[in-house]
Amino acid sequence: MSRVAIEHITRSPALDFVELRSANHSSNCYSSHSHDEFSFGVVDLGSAKYQNLTRRYTTYAGVTVTINPGDAHSCNPIVGDWSYRMLFVSSQWMGDLQRDIVPRQSDDYRPFKQHLLTDAASYQRFSQLFQTLLVETNPLMAEALLIEYCAPFFSGQVTSQQTVKPNLSSVRELIMDQLGCSLSLGEFSQLVDLSPFHLIRSFKQTYGQSPHAYQLDARIKRAKLMLRQGTSIAMTAHTLGFADQSHFQRCFKKRLALTPGRYQKFFVSDSRDVNISRI
Image (cartoon, rainbow, N blue to C red; front, side, top):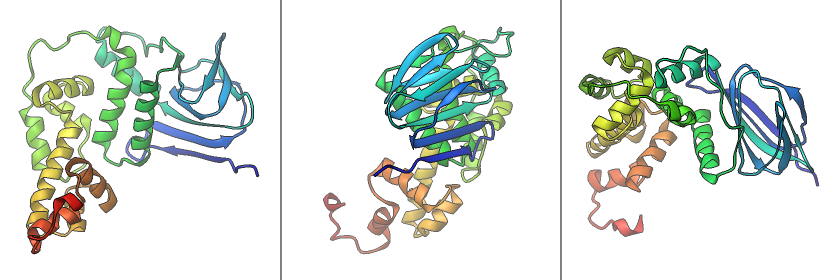
């Protein structure tokens, strides 16, 4: 019995310059073509013949491909069907990021130096980013993760632009003052006159976390207080800016190994007989 091919194309809900595409058990073939965007892709199942300009490769499950804007390429399954995911990122956004990394760059953008990555770590990083961009509605988190993913592709040319350690206390204060708000990297960058790339790097050096990670950590700590005071899980999630109750529960459990409901029971009910080893 043959499987039904499932294909999906969507925009990131947080970043309108990012497009995501996936195909499961597809038999589609692609003749030579190009994209205006920078493209990343992974093969999840099967194998394919892949040509980028004049170079020919064999791709298979676990391989990551990178494609420059305007580069003619083709990819076709070798036998049977295949599954893959693609991420398309605006060349203008990528060029801006590259100029943050290499301030003296005058080109619109610089191309990838590699067409193929075969290590498992690259596949895993792509998978984590792809899944996040599919569902994440917080532009601060989505763009920060995209920057952290893309920057290493061009990091060999990173220069030390900041000679004086910037004062980032105003960024931290804005996060804490508007903990339930959907803030963007652009707002933080304007506040301290740093590019998004250098903001993330400097904030990590100062506080040990990127701005979005710091925001999420602060939200969870505030959530603990609200839950102890008897605030409902739904109201806590809404007040602190989580996309929905499920998103809040996933983030909370990932950090405390307890669901918000189980955590709250220790404080708002008679939990003397509750044994944490059973949770």
